[in-house]
Image 1 (cartoon, one colour):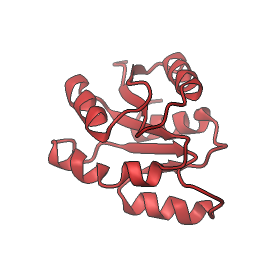
Image 2 (cartoon, rainbow, N blue to C red):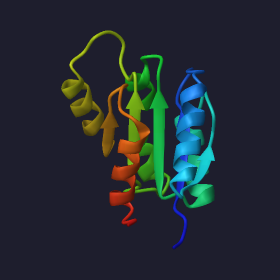
Image 3 (spheres, helix red, strand yellow):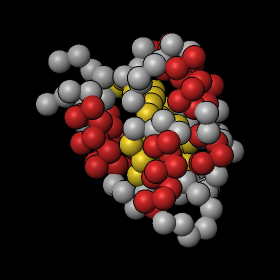
Length: 137
């Protein structure tokens, strides 16, 4: 089976590195080729890496609460860069303060994200969705 490539990173001015490393290792152990951009990654860096590596999906993490601002317009930028339809996953502490996650999820889906996860969601759940999306048994 051909290995699927996923781009991962922590968007914006966020410097939370530990979760990123766990996500990286867990994805690798699940058979994915991981391109880990690390922390403080711009939308453009995610997109450039996806184009360069012919990535199958982009996974965006945010832990410092500004994910909504950092992710705005990302689907449009992907489309403009020739990545129309690339699956976009996002998770973590995406907004500041206590907000109803269902509302947060709807806002991110309206921004074009295919999968939106709350802070407590284990990466294994994302891997199940990733495998379904990429037709991996």
